[in-house]
Image (cartoon, rainbow, N blue to C red; front, side, top):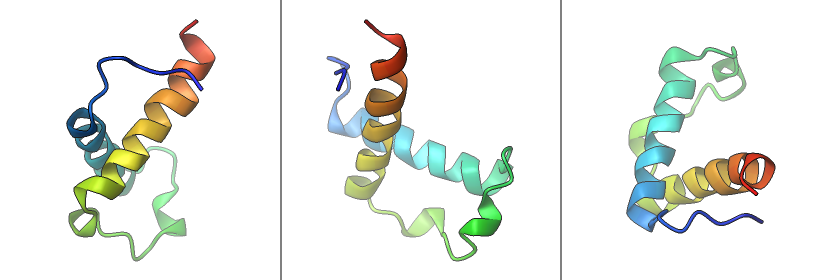
Length: 66
């Protein structure tokens, strides 16, 4: 797994919260219907950090940052 050196837990949580809100509120890919009970306000920072880190490092950095 690629690592982003500057990605702190706080930054990962911020991104995770923003990403989840984007999925639910904007729903550009039409995926919100699969998660009808997903409430972005109910997600705690530690969960948001896991989402943020997973998206940024596992999916993005691993594929595009060498």
